[in-house]
Image 1 (cartoon, rainbow, N blue to C red):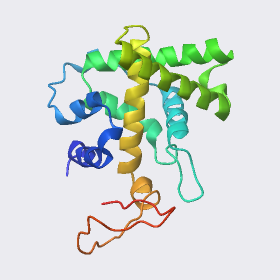
Image 2 (tube, rainbow, N blue to C red; image 1 turned 120 degrees about the horizontal axis):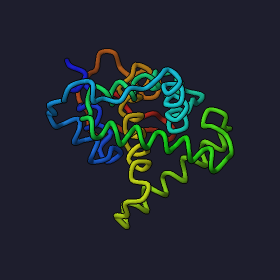
Image 3 (spheres, one colour; image 1 turned 45 degrees about the horizontal axis):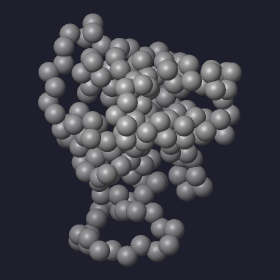
Image 4 (tube, helix red, strand yellow; image 1 turned 30 degrees about the vertical axis):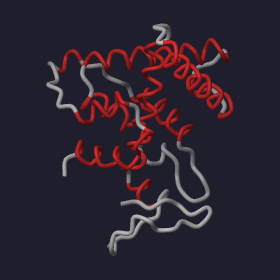
Length: 193
């Protein structure tokens, strides 16, 4: 199975948790232009992506978080392999604006923020995305696009990873019959398929 097909399957499972633009990228067949138009990300950027993703899916008692699942490398890889150059450019501008917002709001770069400060920044970005959706205002468009896309790729990457499938969710190596109405006990993990 190809990577895009596997991610489409995970996207179906996540349902409404993934934005329409991310679903569109996964289900559309883009003809990607020459690679010289693509944005590239550094090893330091990958560390920032890992920290960002780990705020969305942190480590818990029962499973490692997004950083352990390799999302720092997954997010830029998906951006390069699956998104057209215009979307990559908007994502890169939003990524830069994230770092500028961290400096403006907290007086330090993103990697120097505490978990509480990163969480506060994430909440601000979430509220900004809601406000933009309601008002259709163009301000902070790239930053909101970055937030929504990075969040979507975090969810897709995590729940498609080995950690997400085998530790964050219940997993049966050889499944039995299909039961679409299996009861879950309080606190039980959802089933991986």
